Structures are given as C-alpha cells and as structure tokens.
Length: 137
View 1 (tube, rainbow, N blue to C red):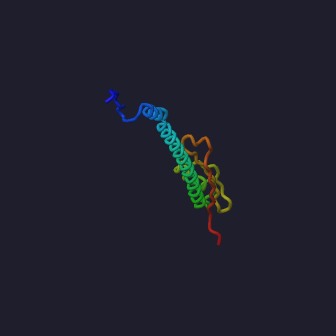
View 2 (cartoon, rainbow, N blue to C red; view 1 turned 120 degrees about the vertical axis):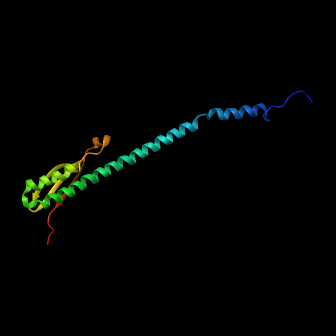
View 3 (tube, rainbow, N blue to C red; view 1 turned 60 degrees about the vertical axis):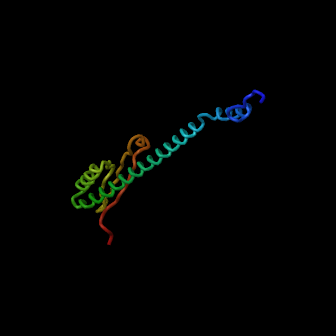
C-alpha cells in the first residue's frame, strides 16, 4: 500500500467541501419562512376576528332597535314620552345607545347605535333603524 489514507467520509476532499458549502449558506432559512408564515396566519386570524366583532356589534344594535321599537309601539297609546321611556329602558339593558325615538301615529320609529369593542371603536359605531306598529288590515 502507498501509505495515504482515504478520507473518512468516503468522498474526495473537493466533494466534501462542496457539500459543506451548500448547507452553510442555507442555515436558518427555514426559521425565517416559518416566522413569516406564522405572522401571516396571525394577521389573517386577527382580520377574521375583527370582521366577526363588527358583525356581532351590528347585530346587537339591530336587535336592540327591534326590541326597543316593539316596546315603544306597545306603549304608544300612553304617549310618546312613555313609549320612548320604555324604548330607552330596553336599550339601556342591552348596552346600546338610543339615538332617536318618536311616534308616527301608532308606529314607533327607533334608531340605535353600538360601539364595537377595543381598537375597532375608531371606525365608528354600528347603527340600526327599526319601525314597529299595528299590522295593516
């Protein structure tokens, strides 16, 4: 034998150096891609939650307007002050603002608004209108 020993990996030194160079340049790239994917997922989830919170606020305002109009219509024979007092009682219990209430004959016309939670409040309140009265015959 000639006295030279082969490399321990079974590859020639040039091949071994080339393989090490390929992996050293990519070190940590997967971590950055995973962080970017997680950030995108969190941003998407935050957007979905914001849309959901806005929808819930809108439904809360609409439900309060409907119930307040029904309460006001029920007390319409007692006058506008009594009818709108009951409409305010309903909206106060539902944590919604009563923006306007008046009677048009026997019909109660109500407008309510509700603020969305947290930072969504800067986009403005959700409003709803409702009308209730006797059925037309």
